[in-house]
Image (cartoon, rainbow, N blue to C red; front, side, top):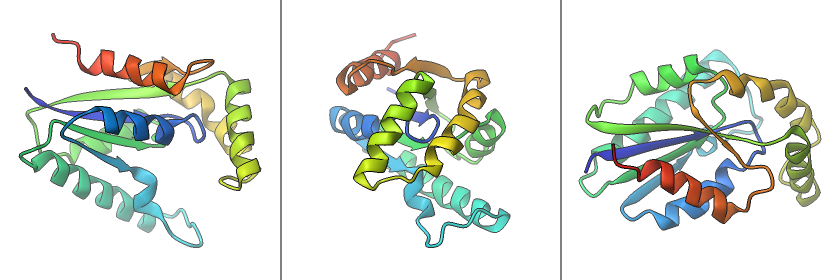
Length: 170
């Protein structure tokens, strides 16, 4: 069986981390990297130096996970809004005999605002997150990825849909 790199992207607040928390536990011999963990800095500064560092950190960890002899699945979730960024990331993966799944979580705009609103109430996000997510929302529609509509679906339903996609034999 080839190792599988499962990239789950989508706009901020769509549920990437929540889905990966559950999916990771269901997949034996799996590793999981949340891209946000490679960019924990205070204050949060987006500049070319930091973007390059974060990408380098992510690629380093993903390559190490993929090299590990016990690996079957590597989950990676992050806000990747363009095919260019996705390609830049994948071009740096050194393991070549792997299956790659590029999955984009989508929802309706109303559902997204509701989810981010819950995060704001819990203190996990601020009100600016709604604006930034809605500004980038349409970028994901045109990406060369498999789209998964999460609107009105439970976490379990979404996880089972992803498992169905990655476990199909060609």
